[in-house]
Image 1 (tube, rainbow, N blue to C red):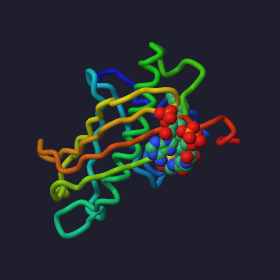
Image 2 (tube, rainbow, N blue to C red):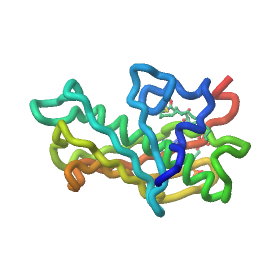
Image 3 (cartoon, rainbow, N blue to C red):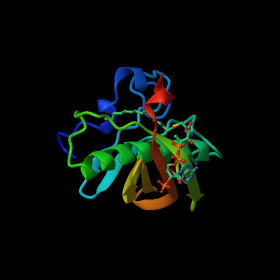
Image 4 (cartoon, protein in one colour):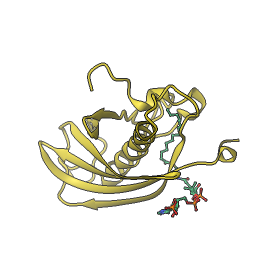
Length: 156
Ligand SMILES: CCCCCCCCCCCCCCCC(=O)SCCNC(=O)CCNC(=O)[C@H](O)C(C)(C)COP(=O)(O)OP(=O)(O)OC[C@H]1O[C@@H](n2cnc3c(N)ncnc32)[C@H](O)[C@@H]1OP(=O)(O)O
């Protein structure tokens, strides 16, 4: 992970306004995803206003962290499957087709969260990942993301 650029830093400027992961969105979460061995990893510390009930993180925020770490992990996996670096062309552009989230336990506010991604399938234009969210070393949320490479026409 050391000295790695997050995959989101390779997204072109015009595609970097996503509320979850766009570096050009001043109001967004700026999620950043890296390889850590065969898994992907991201860290995020919710603000005190990301609250559900006192002391605990809002589930919609957790879903959006899983969403963007899932699409970022999909891009990482797609480049790896082709044995290419993320600064090479053609670029992969993934959007979320399906997002499933299970809230296993309340997620405490006030600590850094760790998201870890496992690549389940890379097939054609589709990548499936399983993402966990941990707080204080304990998994509180699990998610599954189906990311699909968008046709070029989607972006015009
Ligand atoms: C270095 C990097 C540079 C590039 C840098 C790019 C940056 C890139 C911008 C970043 C941005 C971040 C993104 C954040 C995450 C959002 O928030 S994205 C916004 C929310 N998502 C959307 O708006 C997507 C809306 N949906 C769609 O546009 C279309 O349904 C999709 C997802 C493109 C798929 O449509 P399609 O291309 O017609 O899909 P289709 O050919 O039918 O299916 C392809 C495969 O996907 C499967 N599939 C399709 N839909 C589903 C579904 N709902 N459930 C399960 N499987 C499905 C199909 O079964 C099929 O699988 P196989 O048969 O191949 O096994």
